[in-house]
Image 1 (cartoon, rainbow, N blue to C red):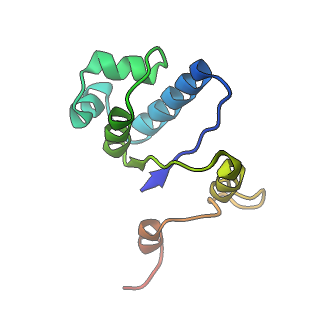
Image 2: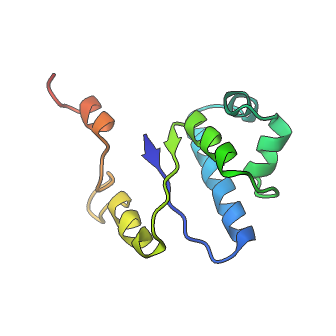
Image 3: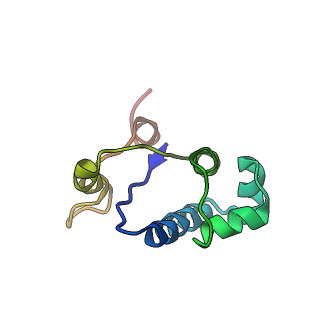
Length: 112
């Protein structure tokens, strides 16, 4: 599973950033808002409002949406966010993240 990290100063900025990340993940998975809403057990208008950042969602709703998108929510101490982000960000001379999950390792060249 992939994870995403955000550290935002205001609630409205955080809602917009969460929505942007959800939309990015949904489009990358070639899924519709309707499909994600169905998998998360919410209505499409409710999902749309979360994705556009016009509405907040309960933690359980965000967890269900994240899992429908193949993501996992994690609570990380704010002081650790820069370190986590640096692990996930590719180096200048590399196009892959510095950290690759076990599942991704299995898909890329590991002999079984």
